[in-house]
Image 1 (tube, helix red, strand yellow):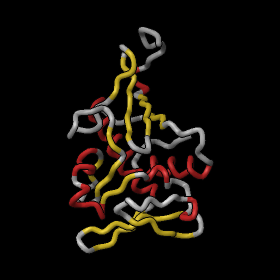
Image 2: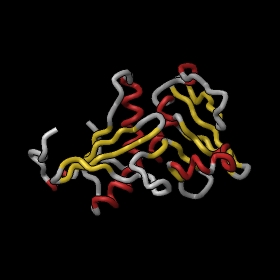
Image 3: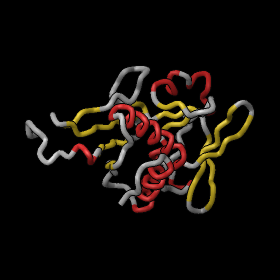
Image 4: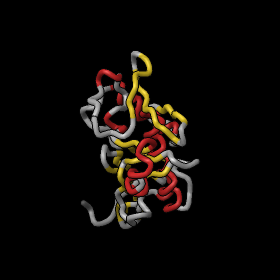
Length: 179
């Protein structure tokens, strides 16, 4: 890695996101090179568990969702990256999941959550967008300006349908249009 970033333009405001199955992380480019953003304020870590809890008005992401799963398991979701762009029949259902995955139509699935005796149905894209929105918010705070560009790492084994689903999640989260 070069000691100094070559061709850095502060106005580009770009970030790189690793949207992981179990954890997420993000880096921004600074004059001294790449710098990771603290995503999880509970642990003060630069990585954040890919968990989302819908037990309150706004979704809670990261370690706070992990810590509260004992009490709010039926409205906490993880492993959504494994479901992005897949039909119900393509998903390997894990019996330890506290949520239920249901068939939505022939081309996708939904996750059924229980919140205060109410049923909430969300797509994997909507849940993934909660994580990506949280990441965007942390990057915006870190840079003290709105995110203009982002690169989200896509696993090489992702199908076109999975890539499209991840792009949909990013757009739902308020990211600029992807190409």
